[in-house]
Image 1 (cartoon, helix red, strand yellow):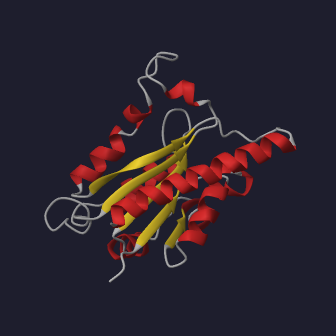
Image 2 (tube, rainbow, N blue to C red):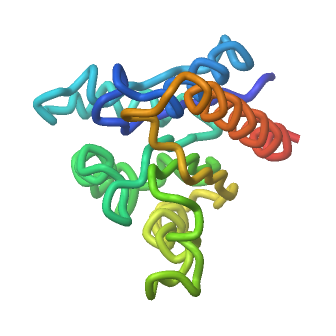
Image 3 (tube, one colour):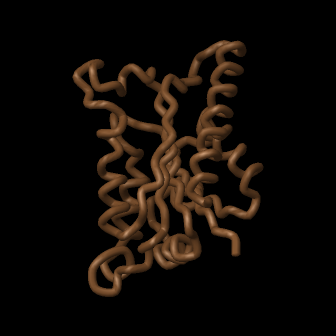
Length: 187
């Protein structure tokens, strides 16, 4: 039996994204049977269909949370999704075992250069520190932490065509690394 993959996109302006759109388009080509959940397109008002979102999570074996880093955090729609969907009795607490044994992977980009997210730059603690809430969420809900793929310096606003091509190539490389991580989890 093949394992089911759910990609949850938290980009707030996907139509304007070069990197995240390229990554997810490549994932669609690599995983045509996967489910793709574009939160902003489905829930622009943040009014989640909780039962529908929970059903997608229950059907998945691997859950890939894909988003751009905004101000050293996931976009607010991703946080709200966790708050509204990962409920007591579903994701944790009495009877809250629906996510146990599934694997969470995070795929994230930043417009800021990768150096901004290193432990010695600008007083920031390093990219892995920003993923601690995701790792804790996985652990608290009984999911396995499958790891992450990160690419920085992905800002495409106001750049020339040569730079856009370089960023597209970088996004495609990110997609290849994400594919390799997913493949390692799937075994």
